[in-house]
Length: 289
Image (tube, rainbow, N blue to C red):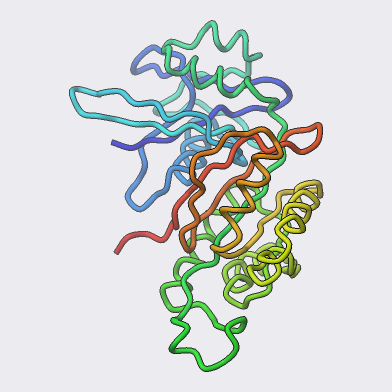
């Protein structure tokens, strides 16, 4: 059984909820609906249980345990509360905004305390960049034009549509892309939804990156330093090396960086210096047929 939840925060306080069915204090969470990803479920469950709209940040923990002998896992995220108001509902009769130390004292379950401890390990206010590998494109041998103009395939268009729903959950705001048309197409629909233009950044494409990878690292740092949450659409020959290089500069030890087509890496940075502190990988959110 898969579920998702979050440490929702605002003004230095975190949300804890009381469930009358179990008479416990816990972090908001709930089961994934059919076809949902963990981020989608976390945002929906937070709205249902607390009444607050949230913007997701870094992945915190995956908690695993058994319910009546069946395995269950819950993915938890940091989540900034944007607006809303609590009203008692079928699952939750009370909600409190508490300082993390006080929340830690009243949480019923040790696994919730561990999630909260991971949340407070870093400042709540972080910087996020949403690094996307372009969705699937048609085969090179079937395309007669220049490779830079090769468009998304029908499967790629479906992947792009799924990303269009996923990326706003993390607060997508600014849009950047490597030059190939397939990179731009991957985020063009979201840019239209947000009323944004896609800024082309040549250093983040494979052609320029192969000769000057340091320029891509510098471009990523500059993008991360801007206002709002940036989306960057790039290529498979760039993303693993770019993230690994930035992580090394930040003193962050990462496992092998994945970058399947249509996937997302949520990069989290902290001040001072915009050091990279996490790189959370999400495969293509395209629903399985």
